[in-house]
Length: 172
Length: 417
Image: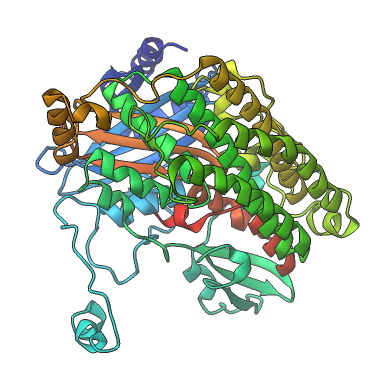
């Protein structure tokens, strides 16, 4: 399966969905309209000659200072064609919302929860969009670029109370 | 055993809150059992919230994140070379596989050539790593089902592999041996003989483990027909590795999308049909034999290649040897620049996937042209595979839950990162 022909077929089938496509180091990436993501994914999954049947990877990226600020990156894999394709959707800072792919691939469930937890990206239609890696009472989304790396003070018996006093749960 | 089509089966992945909520009027009263995070048979800090009707699992919600250390975030503030040591700490049972995936991604960003000797050594070592990782899985899986001797035998052989890692890298576990451009140091002179000594015994030892388990009625009773994951559901949940192959799908990135010249090695991809705990056991056992087979070919290849460079000669990527630094000003500058500033891959992103012992391990790196990665994401097989657990466990007994969790071989360092 050739990169160019995949991009061509997608453009032909869904002309308004594709914003741009480019190749870097032999890998094909396609930037798609956030509203058209489900249609694009379903087309790529169900088209008999393409059959990208496997959602391999889903992750968020924060391009702070750029518009749109957030990007969600999807990697789809075709078992029959041994080919990989990368989809990207850009999401604005004011409303980082995109449709959930859990309806097409249940594997998107935890990966979308991770992107929500770490970047604050909202996946519309996700069955239970909760934090997965960070504690439930955590404030903010740690992998955003405007969150400093930060350090956690090590608690010993002599300073445990001082540290506890600064924690979010102390205010409750 | 035939199974219903996916559309009629429950593919939902509950969260703990779905299970711990009080029963609604008219709902059957069930018991909620909290298993873990410090339970020996969850193989790490995995918490399972289990809903039980008597001894039968009605539903189970895996709760993860106890081992989250922000590795992806930390990598953004380190240079590419320094980020490498973080990868060891994700899947701590297969650090070399993680090293490999990361360095391949950075090398793809840099578009740099790797000497054939380094590639052969990488293949040899990651296949040894696969055997050692499977031995830990085998030992702990058998231990969970009360077959203690396999654990002791398995760790005896694993120790030999760790000795080989110590020989080449100086560390038994956190090796960081693969570097961008090749290897950290050359292979020591006694390396071929040590590996050969191990390869001479391993097939016989795998026979011994199989003698203990494969036809053992107790083992069959506990694993056959337990935790069935069919092909359709495995693909839906994104399960890769032995879990996918035991369901009858022959998908192995080493074969299907080769990297590191895997297409030039002669090996088979073991598969099974039923997708139960026993089949996952059989697939992993067969995989160990295939890995040993690849190791022999790689060792022969290293012998045929003879001595040669073990790391790229591009001084903008890999530091010059110490001997050069003492008499070449340019080498000294390269050394200094690399360890203070690091190298700068061009802007762009790269995605590389490899077949780790647990399935498909992938690294996605975004470079903004600076010496530090802008974003690193690791698609770890344990994290994705664990989503299939509720599907596999419903309807079985609590004791089976222990067996089928072990057969998924999750490593929590990799789940939580």
